[in-house]
Length: 74
Image 1: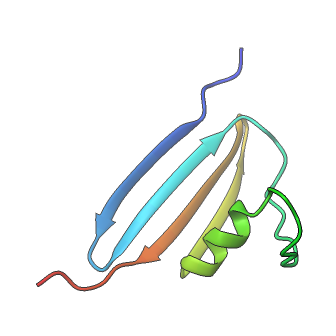
Image 2: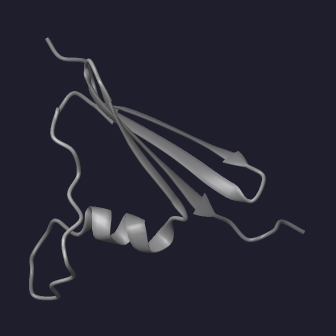
C-alpha cells in the first residue's frame, strides 16, 4: 500500500510555504500556456504565483515545495 499524499503549510515572515508529497514517481512538467487546453493548468498557475519552487525525489515518490510571497501584515 502506498503512503497517502500529504500537505503542510505555514507562514514564515512575508511568505507562505507549502509542501506537498505524493507516491507518484513522475515529476511535474511545466507546459506552455494554451488557453484552449482543458485541465492541467495547476503547475502553470503555481509558477505564476510563487517565487520559489523545489521538487525532490524521495524513495516513496516526491516532495514539492513552493514559496508564495504575502503582503506585509500591519
